[in-house]
Amino acid sequence: MRKIAVLTSGGDAPGMNAAIRGVVRCACSRGMEVYGIERGYQGLINGNLYRMDSRSVSDTIQKGGTILKTARCPEFNTEEGIKKGADVLSAYGIEGLVVIGGDGSFRGMRDLSNKHGIICMGIPGTIDNDLGYTDYTLGFDTAVNTVLDAMNKIRDTMTSHDRACIIEVMGRHCGDIALYSGIAGGAESIIVPELPFDIDEMCNKMKKNIIKGKVSDIIVLAEGVGSCIDLKKEITDRTGITVRTVKLGYIQRGGTPSMQDRVLAARCADRAVELLYNDSKESKVIGIKRNKIIDLPIDEALEIKKVFNKEMLEVASRLAH
Ligand code: ADP
Ligand code: F6P
Image (cartoon, rainbow, N blue to C red):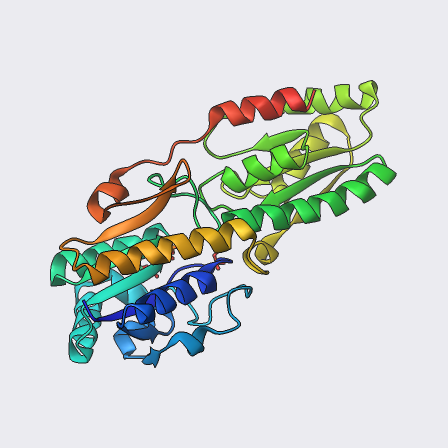
């Protein structure tokens, strides 16, 4: 293929710009033409695309967000919406598309490919780390480091006042942000949607912690379980312990991408472009397994269920002793 396009879709994630830059530069270095599509599938349907070259992505590798902007596009969930998108690509003579996004974006890409024969390559871009076929997604490492930075600060003040605090983190239905930040930040409890959680057991632990002389108690709560306000009420009703809450929210999606996310973006982009350049006959998604870049057919990848790392949660529980 000699003419391709790239878009970002769904929630933005740090490292998306590094991936766009990787796609544009790897394609230009092979003599391919590249178009940037603005605002994800919405921009594709509306025909918002422009020609990019190596200089269009100067000074972007370190930036959070996405220079191509992103959107959630309900119209792309319909047959007509997907057809409009395919028509725009064919009007421009674009032969291949790189989609940087999460599970929803990949489902859109699969429809575009299966129903209209457009060859697409997916690069996993979401802070949630909720895709089963890859060990990591772009943005996850940065988001966890952002949570850790906040946790360190929260711990300072909670320790000074001998207080307990619930920190609610993002992740949609996935507990990975809570799990990794909880372990790395030394949380006393980590609550995730993938595993049942016993509130009475946690409350007893909090009471014992006070007796044992633990001066602060940090509970990391994944948003997929529920809200920190509801949990606070349940704990206070059961124990009488005063609990503070912090919902970290969108700061987890912003900021300069970490080394891990930039390197992952570069490696995934290079593979995506290589597959398009070599005229791949099927649409694929790129990922990383045991530090090796992998690609596999989109249909196959979307069937792979995300497996929660239960052993890591057990380690966290021993560390909180
Ligand atoms: P993410 O890609 O981060 O999971 P979303 O789930 O919001 O984010 O999906 C991003 C966009 O992908 C949606 O707004 C929609 O345009 C498209 N999309 C999601 N699911 C589907 C689907 N089943 N079929 C077609 N398009 C979809
Ligand atoms: O998928 C990324 C994510 O930040 C989730 O962690 C969160 O649940 C969701 O997007 C928030 O979406 P919105 O930007 O629509 O509020």
